[in-house]
Image (cartoon, rainbow, N blue to C red; front, side):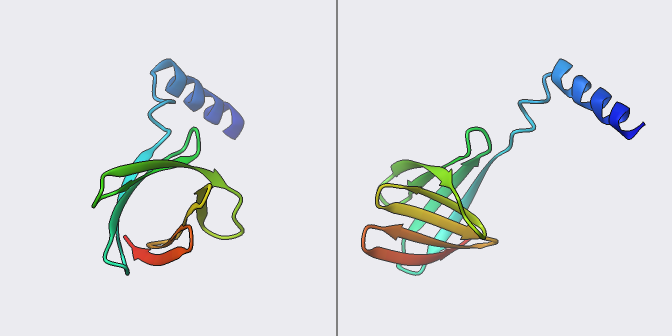
Length: 100
């Protein structure tokens, strides 16, 4: 019975165009210990984070990568690792902690 109800609910979501809106996009502002600010916009599909460094308006898109704990996004020398409201931003040899 539960499968039938879930199946009907999923079919209704698709027919009403709600399936795409279920893929959330969330923008979160972070203040970092090195006095920098950034905004991370998290996308579920594909699993990426768009990071905008507020001081320069530089934007990078980081794909989500394997993490044992929290959400980790990385490409090249940039890594953004979040857990709850805390985050660590690594750019090359520079590392700072951030809070949302």
